Length: 271
Image 1 (spheres, rainbow, N blue to C red):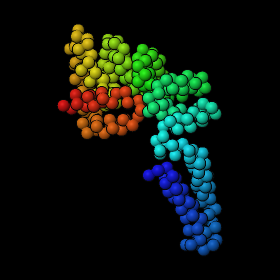
Image 2 (image 1 turned 30 degrees about the vertical axis):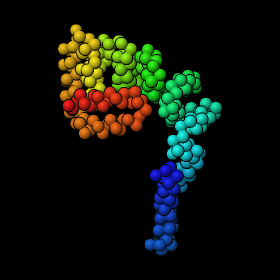
Image 3 (image 1 turned 180 degrees about the vertical axis):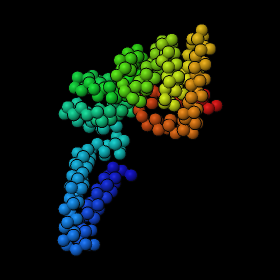
Image 4 (image 1 turned 135 degrees about the horizontal axis):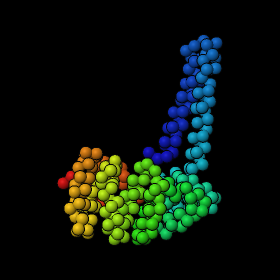
């Protein structure tokens, strides 16, 4: 179903409710009680009318954006977003995120870095809210040392679920940068305490299948932590749930850098 169909259905539903509120009292009640009913319901009716007007304004303002998304015309979408964000200076978190994702779909990591520099000047807080996308661009662009510094800078300021993912990517980039001991420390902490099954499982997988061999003097310790993390993961996410969550996460562009590791970790966790 395309955006236009959704718009038509949603608007029709709102108009239907508005019509019911206005005309139903006159069909089932006498005139005085019907007018009394409308006196009590007019605030709700006003809210519906304002919502209907706002929804229409939102759709028609972004109609070109929706059309390009439907067509999956990424080059045209990037030009459209550049015009709205960079030329017109409308640095909203949603538009910036969409443009960064579009650049990554086009494999244009340099454009992501250029966008980040502009956002850092205009609205730096937006970078923190999209830290995984901008960090992943560095990984895909082979700027591993830059990715290490980037994730390290945001690991203390990120909040909630995002913070654990920032810490995981920090450990991952340390591993890619051959800083094995530091990577082992990060993954060990996450394998022990993370409440996210995917993060726990990935951390345990890299400890067992990579770092335990790259750090032979710590092989026993890392293997024990990894096996404990595997048990925790199996309790948090049974195999079916791991697959479901992996599929859900695959829609996030920052997972593009680790898709094959998700599959390998799943085999290690549930074999």
